[in-house]
Image (cartoon, rainbow, N blue to C red; front, side):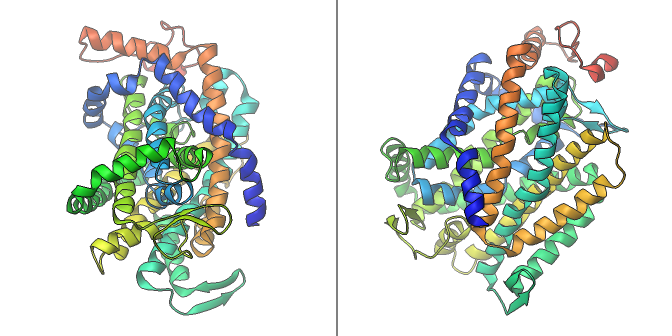
Length: 491
């Protein structure tokens, strides 16, 4: 199974996708005149200013839901994997894909806002919706919707829950081994899986409002606690920080693991972590209540910064400063070996060991707890995304019980991921991310060349911003944007 998954990933994550992610980010950065830099102050204002409604959640709640998808296993285990397989230089390429990807996040999230719909009193939207309405290709939208249900309903939750299981097992021990139909499993992982599924079921059966309410409290609190711990570790080793920064930049251009490995792993784990261009963030963006589509695009661009430049960087500095990492070479060889060779890079182990080396007896349980909340809220975000695409399909084929079936499937996948091996879970997750990224990036590029709706929205917002209006409005017909019916009706 692992060999098959790796074979498929070899095609999906070819150099073409790596450079497509970087190239698209650079292209949209130039086209928007680096909106991610020019409107940084405005991003902060919008983040704190939003209000919810009966149909939609607030900008901050939408940010929290999308951040719950962005801030997850990728920030703790993903960064470790990038360093373990790509070397310290991979961190630099994670920064690059985040900076450029912020403009991609603006484009896709603004598109989601422009083409959102009111579905029985709740805003829905995302790539499937804007591909159908802006591109006019329903068949392509269906392929994206089905791929996303597969990725977010089955493949990606296994990565998040697997990291929780591994972190808990490393922090508290495996406990007695149990023979089951799917192999010999540790009782710690079985109990962890059962607990995760129980809470997951309670929240997802409560709907999007419950998901938003949960994530807006948990995500900022845990992200802040995690960053504070990281800052303490960096502060205690501040004399080594210039050396570590120099190592990251030097290794980015003279990589010990090879140029392809550094860029490849940096971009792969960067996209996995911040999700820019992947097509997941737009689903939460569409659910927000805003006066102008560009506003939520700017808020979502800011979430990429929070994810990679803050949380991922904190993890990277902690791992590199404490030296709790290896760099894998060809086969079983190591280019750098600081710790035992049997410790998996595709797991939270490097991060746990790094924090444990500074806070003995506290580090491993703290990372297990942080990872539980990060990964659990990411699974909630995946359910929200998959449900949006089920709702899209139900617009054409209203098959009863589809949403209930999705809930059962994602709970089953979550349990399965908790108890299985890390390499298989990450491999399946990479397939899901890669499929969505290919489909979404090609879609938003075609839409841009066809009509430039997100760019028109940005120019309209800039015009109103310069005029100092107190209440922003959005008139799609005036801007030559077609099929934005909800905004037309609202106006």
